[in-house]
Image (cartoon, rainbow, N blue to C red; front, side, top):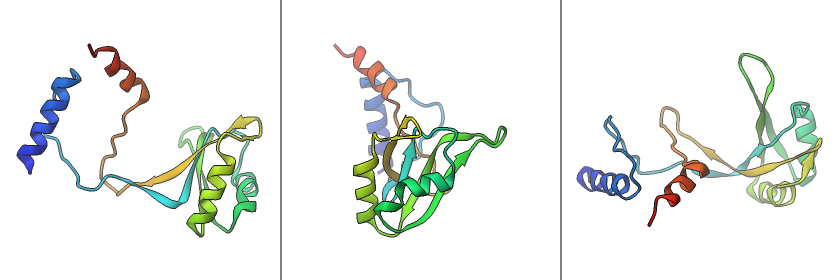
Length: 138
């Protein structure tokens, strides 16, 4: 198994002209999975607080938790948060209805939240990196 994963890493680094990592890679069998009742809400205005976020989503069903992420140093909102519904149907309805809608003048970006295991690194490719890779293809 380790040899086949090392081979895959080598093929990827060669094909996309990415230098192989200098440290040993660890591969995990299960990537983070989307939580079916927890929504990631991005694009929040700094003036949005947990009460106004809950009010914006409460018409879609029973909300068990609302959390906005704040910067440790400044105490200012980092522009995103989470809304957790009691069931996945309500979360899906809220996502479908609210994604792209404005809240206090800013369009919301809503996705199902990824549950990450503590201590396990999560690597998500950036869209700019994908564009960089496509430019070098012949």
